[in-house]
Image (tube, rainbow, N blue to C red; front, side, top):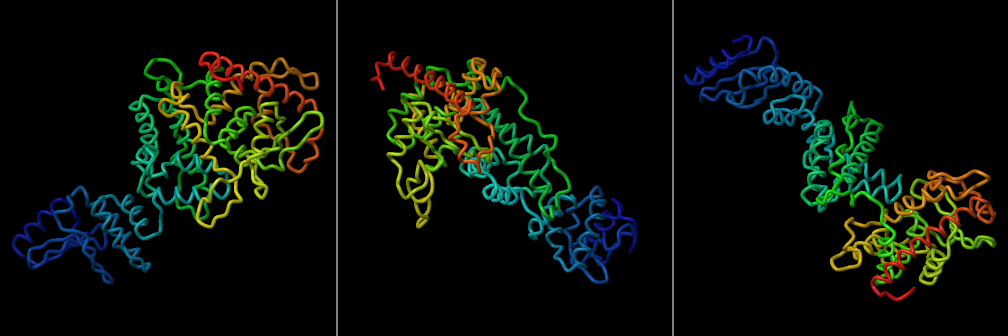
Length: 466
């Protein structure tokens, strides 16, 4: 029996099933779509054609409203069958979702022709690990919820396990808001964490769209914005203590804590980071051969940071003392100033540098209950040392000149960010340039600022002089 399927057709099929009347209804609008009634009284939606017969689902599964979607399913399923592919995944997913497009992306995942968000994210992280700095990989791994025991993993619940092609802007907005809401419940701002996740998602989609054979026709992160509500930056007391740089006395507390910490190598690395304003990774990866004796300046450090920028940093006296301490602790056979402390895997050797997490764990220990940094309202981390230098020294740069030009606050980047291009010109570190002189004066003033903070804390708490 051939007719244009509608609600009336479904009613006729039910009546035929009630009479145990074996018959078939064929849709005139979609070749292959049929309703079949068996002698037993069972009625099913089917695909019936000359070369293929298959059951979709029981008659009761779909209503008249689903008929247009069924008409979209049948030709796609028949095409897969004709192409030699298994259409069962598509049919099964359609039965549960009643949407051809959504069923298609889930079916592609089950058949191995497409990836879930989790699979694509992990492929991205492999690429980041091979092509970017270790700190970048670690940050993306956390920000994208790839660490299952991390609270961030649960924040990604709207995307976890979802086919990549079906991830929407709304899914990512929900992830961002999940992070912020978790911050509200914890009583701590998570705006920065949410924005780091937004940045990581945008980076992921840019990479995804540039992959060879990329099946995703659009970038859903294009309109994804950062957390815009600045009220979320305030803690429960109504001040912005979570969004500021360390004060001078708090820097003094950091120094006091470092001198109390049991891991001498980690505390020495942190001291060198504090007094030079460099990244944690730059300190962990510092090679002994990168430190030179300049007859006019003293020890200078020629380093490459995580952005592959090369800079020359002169060491003021206390930073030089930290360097001397590190040299006394290092191993002759290891090229790093802070050598690897233990094997990362069995048989992996000990030729590497100190794990960056070892440096961070020293801070985490000093922040724990009843330790010296536990009273600071903000959660102090290694990046706060670099931030403190930029905050406190930038306004003071007007006191200095290079080549007759008065410096501005932006010139702090020559210490923290600038790329001086000295990778292949190691001899230049011996030059007594005005820039090197001024850098030493700035870092010496910063060093005095830090240890004046320690003196304040020392007198308040009756600590011994250094």
